[in-house]
Image 1 (cartoon, helix red, strand yellow):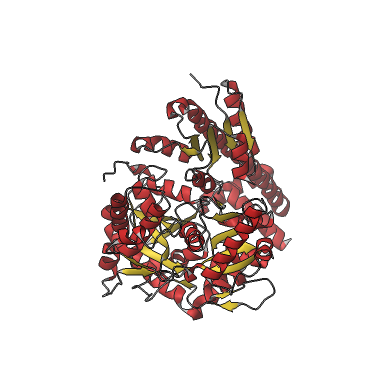
Image 2 (tube, rainbow over the protein chains, first blue to last red):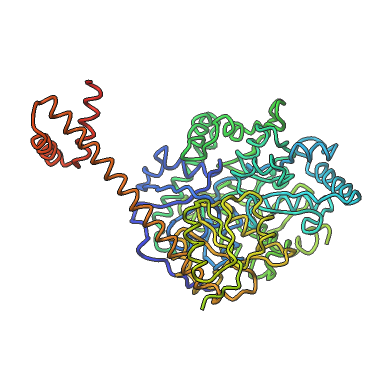
Amino acid sequence: MTFDTATPSTRRSSAGRLRIGFIPLVDCAPLIVARELGFAADEGLELDLVREVSWANIRDRILLGHFDAAHMLAPMPIAARLGLGHVRVPIIAPFVLNQGGNSIAATTALYAEGGDWGGFGDPLASGRALARLLEARRAGGAEQPTFASVHPFSCHHYQLRHWMAAAGIDPDRDLRLVVVPPPHMVAAMEAGDVDGVCVGAPWTSRAVDAGVGRLLLPTAALWPSAPEKVLGVREDFAERRGEELAALLRALDRAAAWAEEPENRPRLAEIMARDDVIGVPAAAVMRTLSGNLLVEKGAAPVPVPGFLRFHGEGETGPINRPRATDGLWFAAQMLRWRQTSDAETAFAAAREAFAPTWWDAALDRPSREAATLRTFEGAVFDGGDPERWLAGAGPSFA
Amino acid sequence: MADTSLTILVIDENPARAQILEDGLRDAGHVDVVRLETTHELLKRVFEIDPDVILIDLASPSRDVLEQMFQVSRTVKRPVAMFVDQSDTAMIEASVDAGVSAYIVDGLKKERVKSILDMTVSRFNAFDHLTRELQRARDELAERKVIERAKGILMKSKGITEEEAYGLLRKTAMNEKLRLADIARSVVTAAQLLG
């Protein structure tokens, strides 16, 4: 694969100063913390953090070199390398910012209509409840419901589809899937534009607070160990400014470790809640950080251990270390849902985007990694043979 | 030649800028121009309006909503990104710099739309220029007012003429390596504190 898009030299940031784009979500915390607590300054870096309103803007500004790095949805670098829907951009993901943090929620109206959804966090029972609801609506000639995620190349989108497909629902035929920007989610639920959502923190929490939504499951119940957001940089930036990238990865490593520490959560919640970061009440951020989720308004919070992880050992290796198997998993979702068709190219892009080379070089930390990924139905995805999952255990309705 | 048969949708929360763009498009012969200021129920509206070209303000989070439409195969006419070739980078840069992004309906040749995008970029840039000029004029006016007030305060408290008061402000600004307006502002603040 060749890339020939030029980076305009006039926009390049000067040495030691990095311009980084982020979307107002709790999981951009390592970037904010690296600046606010001086971890970046300790590495001789000055971070210019720029809040953006859409993932499309983030992608374009990385393409043009306006941003040196950005907070990205984990599947985005692969989609960008494949040029899906846009110009090919050679992006890599040298650092995983977090795991988890998303939830699937229904509007209170859809929840009431569905009857028995099983216990909170039960993907099979809730999926079956949705399947029954769809069947009842079909029989009654009622309109299909609409579910929202945040981007076509997001974990949220694939998690919704995976959850539905496991219950025998065809998400392309049986209901409508749309995208709603996270800050608009609560209003869209309130207006009845959408009946269900999969979105990251703190927005599901806000929907419950507003009395318009009810949580069905944290997506960690579907994919216990997948990366959620990554740091995305252009490959040629990594090559040209390797030392600064290594310094940034070390700063992010310390920032993520700080964010993971339970005793730092109140301070972190305060920082993330600020108007120049997310602009929501600190209490909503705090619930997310501590994993004490408000499932429905007025009820006692439900603890979800490991709801949002920033650092440390995960089920398949160090949380922040890119792992080819995770990239292959995302590429397999793109293939499964026909966003792309050439498996060989998609898997190659995934391996390139999720290579641990930069993390290993910057942190020089012995680490082990598993070669597989586990999902809630017990299916095992083997990074050594991604085609097998696609051919067999994958699309349950195919 | 402009292709005047196309339906153009302008999504911009800034009504003044959207108006300027619409006027330009109409002057160029485009009669079918629809403006949306809000992105409420955007998909439904896009479906109803059925545009050939969508121009959207980069400050709108709804770009991601449109990009999902590329993926949905069951919409009859679906929008796609205008720029998918590696050679389009310069055009992307011009539009991102201007603060706008363009989508066209699948199958439409982008040559047919280029003049529309060129006009959009130049109108967005012109609007930005005007806004900044206006802001500068406002700032200057505000500065002139504060200098007048500081002069008045000095004249009264020190019993000096207007000319002397102005000279004193200027001299202090030069010594302190500050702008005249900044010194004037501190005089006004100090007077309020000591009032």
